[in-house]
Amino acid sequence: MKNLGIVGGGLLGRVAAFVLSAAGHNITVYEKSSSNPLPGSKRSAAFSSAGMLSPLSERESGGEEVFTLGTRSMELWPILDNLVKKTIGVGLGLKIQGNLFVSQHQDLSFSERLFKRLHYTKNAIPHDTIKNFEPCLNQQLKCWLVENEGQIDPLMAMENLYRASIKNPSQASVNWCFESQVTEIEGSTIFAGKSKKVFDWIFDFRGTGVNDSNIRGVRGEIFVLQPSKNFVLNHPIRLIHPRVRIYIVPKFNGEVAVGATEIEVEDLSPVSVNSTIELLNAAQIILPELNEARVKYSDVNLRPAAPDNLPIYTSNSKGTYINGLFRHGWLLAPALLESVFLDIGIKTAISFTQ
Image (cartoon, rainbow, N blue to C red; front, side, top):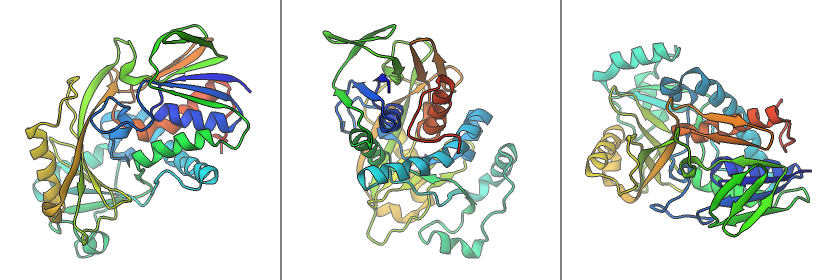
């Protein structure tokens, strides 16, 4: 058993707190926001995600490193989901049913070139069977079903990882220090306000909240819609387009998430008119019945990104620093933490070598 400090209670912090506490380690988590921060507030980028899990899609911009880690995460998320269910009775909103890639007729040549770069060779869904897959989908679109991909519900997962860490099956203590600003990490000591505490190991997962010149915030905007009662969407959808990257993800409560922009500016002001038109126009072209959907809310957040948009991971004799998950947080988190825990030789509740 070790006494471990975690700075940053976002996605990485919550997954780590759960699997480490369940293995018997005493955990203290420092998080500057509240336990359940609202849209529009300064909060972890993980709260503002649609939760689409697509290693193939992210291979386009992230390359082989992101694809390999993402593929491994698709094996680890079901293990984590089952462990959370055993701990608190509910899971993470995980559903691995495949994702749909769709293309308009005028973009088919771009789609073919993209799939060639991604080494994807499956045929499109026969046109006369599309309605069986997605009855509300624009039937003029070309569609491909990418298997072994899916989605996770970010809000459900963030809440239940937190709950499961507290109700862990071991006798370890877990202390969540919300609205706690860490001012300094010096060796094995964390300074927060007027208090300080020494740990056996410290994990720094602060994202854009850290003072690191290599990390920038990339603005992302998302809409959450409430469709009509007759609306059906069975799979997350990614629109293949030469200029914009649009995805539409169904939620367990019937809502639909539409995202996301990717703007090189550290700005948390409300969603712009331009982004609103771009995202919602694409959504109603893909799923015409969304014309009558109601906009429940929009959200804006900053994704932490390194210069090459790939994760940063370093360790010394006192702790580990991870940052720069960019737009890949939900896709990479389990596999990245697996790599870290194996490297530093720390026991967790999951046998990552299975």
